Length: 178
Image 1 (cartoon, rainbow, N blue to C red):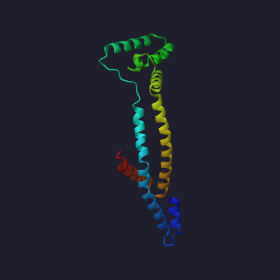
Image 2 (cartoon, one colour; image 1 turned 120 degrees about the horizontal axis):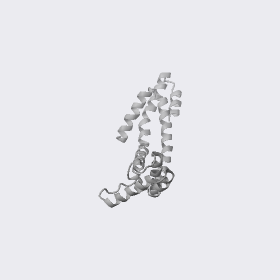
Image 3 (cartoon, rainbow, N blue to C red; image 1 turned 180 degrees about the vertical axis):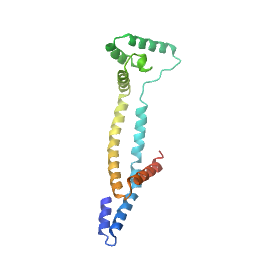
């Protein structure tokens, strides 16, 4: 689109150099709105995917289940009594009890606690994680194409970087409402 505008401006003998640059700049600015509109669904899906990923977490047990809480507490106490080398395998087998409380209550270092959490989430939400990752890959392709087009428009808009970025944010807010 920008290349054809440049060719049309170059072929128009009635335009000066400044007029040609102004014509290309206007075309670039006019094409910002359609670009943002076309990619609105991808931005919405990206936010949706981020929310889905954030909601993948271990369940919070009911606090009125006193027996269940005592059982989880005993499992964490037993985990603390184990040698450090035996704690991680035990924690992986009893991950819901371990993940119900802060890492210090199970005697696991933070990196091992995170490993237990990641292992639990992968096992429990495997298909959903795979779907999210597939969508993220597709969205990355759309974002790369959007960024390429946006950079082309920015380079030919005749506007300062800050002014163009402000215009993009304003148009995106108007379209997305976010």
